[in-house]
Length: 456
Image (cartoon, rainbow, N blue to C red; front, side):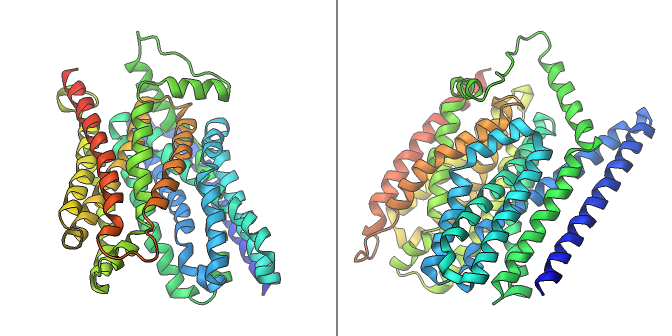
């Protein structure tokens, strides 16, 4: 059986490689044969292919988020939590190196490296756990650490390549497309597990390995093809036309120089606040809200409705605010982006106001508002990155912001877990009040930026 599995992986790898090579040859021939009148069609098809693979890569990252679906089948809860913690460390604390890899290696080689790290990490963990069980937990944790790094690298490529390859006025739509595919990826991988791999965690790991291999190989081929070169050249031509006559400083070649340039960027403090407060809060709260719901005595039916609405409203927020972020009324460049930030942060502030009035009565409505706002800030953050940093610095800036997010994430995660003997609304009152004050500060900052954008 093991030999058959490895033959299956090799067959999938060869099939993906063959399809990728065939795609590259056809794209190259088409690029030479297409007349000038059909260049716009070729460009649209190239962007469609790139956005497609970006969505597939983003969905690979969600395999990390659904570890709880099969973790209890793999090990006992305590040991499974250690594996998930190792994967989370690889995804969060190695985000900055992943961003540097994207800028240094480019999307093609970064995709291949991310797929290789994910495959090697998962394969190592499955091999040692299948042979030695929990006795090899340390080696398995290292494997899941590599899996986490590979997944966040593929996620970095998927999101940043999508917003990089489209014109700036469409970056919100591209970010919404990729982020919505990530949300759908959670449901897709969960359904695959429920349909074919329930009770067979090692077979599900084999599925994750096969998905990682195929997505990485196909992504490598597309990012090395004429499709990527054509779409990127068109965007750079438009950017050069807009910046003609303006002296735009070149990005420093060294990583240290790029970091200093990112820190000195005028929009960095605002983006840091977005990552450190609303995004970090949601990362922590989305994993702990059932504790609060149980403490408030909400019935199981209400908790099920909340769980379903979180994903739906988050996806809706990505679409709505992604479209709003691309809105340029009367040629005023960033009005739509700043309005989207202010509105999405206002949803957070409104939810905390409801929770201050009555937690039990308004908990479900507050969760929907926060999910909608979370989808908005997550999408708009990618748009703001595209607008604030050059294409050469996108990965480093994104990785660094994701890296510093872990600081407040741990604080939020610690603060939203009550003591064991605490029950009722008092358990989370201080946490909601503090979070409300922080988000209200972000709203005021957003209003100030919006007013400044309206005057330009």
